Amino acid sequence: MPMFQPSKRDGVVVAAFDGSGDGQVLDLDTAVKDGVLGGVGGGVIGAAVGEKLDLKKMIEELDLPEIPSVFICPISLEPMQDPVTLCTGQTYERSNILKWFNLGHYTCPTTMQELWDDSVTPNRTLYHLIYTWFSQKYLLMKKRSEDVQGRVSELLQTLKKAKGQARIQALKELKQVVAARATAMKTVVDEGGVSLISSLLGPFTSHAVGSEAIAVLVNLELDSESKTNLMQPTKISLMVDMLNEGSVETKINCTRLIEKLMEEKEFRAESISSHRLLVGLMRLVKDKRHTNGILPGLSLLRSICLHKQVMGLIVSIGAVSQLVELLPALEPDCLELVLFILDTLSSLPEGKAALKDCGNTIPNMVRLLMRISESCTQYALSILWSVCKLAPEECSSVAVEAGLAAKLLLVIQSGCNPVLKQKSSELLKLCSLNYTDTIFISKCKLTRTIL
Image (cartoon, rainbow, N blue to C red; front, top):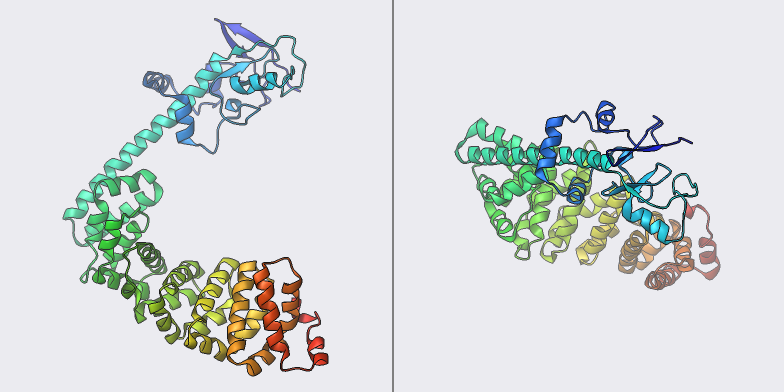
């Protein structure tokens, strides 16, 4: 175990460090030499001290992932703001070590040595190191933030005057800055950038400009007025065009932005009652080469499904069978979205008919029972009920042959929602009507159905 010998220099406790990495730094010069402060020079130290910054505030605002271990209190594992040293040479945050003493412990928490002196001495040298290190990081963050704000202002001014390639370049740089810095997003919003960028979208906007403008807007906090402005038919039309013809990144950004607009209370279903929008969405969802578009595409389709006026249009473009065919290859988060969409569409007569007519509906739904989550089981069960109720003789037989009876028994015997158990019992009864008792019991055996 490393040993530490506390000493005093000008009334300040300085803990000697044996180089093992477990103790405290020797002094300021050693700390700078060993890289504890990242090579901070005297000028920065002077500036930091002159600023009279609040250490607690700096620690909270910086929220750094990596902090020198000598700055961390061994008790709380948080940066120290008031370090004090014990007679063993170990240093702790004052409030933490006092709590330790108040609990009746008279040992050093790190070494577990009994203390021959329970007094604590402020470690001013370490405090100065901590304060200086955080000050350097904080002032650098502030400077970068000011630089970013200035650059954002310049880019917004450029967008007001620039055209053609210069406008595209300004938007590209703004997109990069906004994606990298939260302060940049705030500056764009505060300086009226949302309205400015939105004004660039219209019937005569090129896709090159439109794609970059939307890439910026999708990363901003949009207020109600901004969303209403973006819901203009000409702007929505441009987004739909780019959803069909743009790059994968552009398609995803258009999808995310439209979904953002749909959160607005004043959103009108007519804006999304577009055959072209839905076809573009289905292309994005089915794109096997670019699977990063599946989740955002399904998320928007789910939101659209909540508008009854559009549900029939979704069925009419053949979305039901296409979504059913996608099920075996989807990740769990996407699976749940697809099942929600199909369950919602099954409330329509044409939705039920489309599910019944798709040959893989029943096998895929049976396979998903008790496989992914209770929500997925609920949606799959609801879809199976809709289909079997529509054509009991035809669909019930297919479902039982696919192993439905055994799966339903699993649901009934599980600890899931009582409503699911009740629905499973009703579906099991419906399926049994086409069989004699003996044959149906044989169908309920748990064989291949769990696979």
